[in-house]
Image (cartoon, rainbow, N blue to C red; front, top):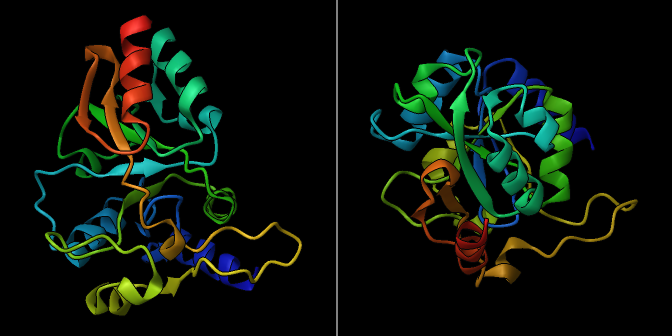
Length: 208
């Protein structure tokens, strides 16, 4: 719990943290702070033309930062929390640095208890991008993390059973078959990246 508190404090201070999700480790920063967002791009060596998604602890929290249509809300209610990134129109609180100047932003509500606890404590949307240098493999265990990422992170939240009051989450290394999140634009029925639950999402788009 102390690690989560330190990580939440670091996010609010504009620093970077590494945190587990149900897919891969994420690199987190305050997604509403343009300077913090720039630190994420710098740490990853990511092209500024490639937008970054944000994570929040619930769909109602997401709706404070995006303008979602009724169909998008229905989709989010069906698939979130889960390994899915939904593209929605951003509100003014979401900086253009995060979206590479685009009007839409990716929204994640991870299905992972430690991640959700961190997001609740942070009290702000947190960047949801893989904790790796761009072009390298995503990290499913702490040992997989690029040294450059660890060096830039103020706190690394490890996915271990250090919270005895909670049921144990499987280690990310035990979930090697789990792909990254599926990225979907419900408004255009377009799947931008096929990942977890892609077939179910495709069926939903066809039926709704």
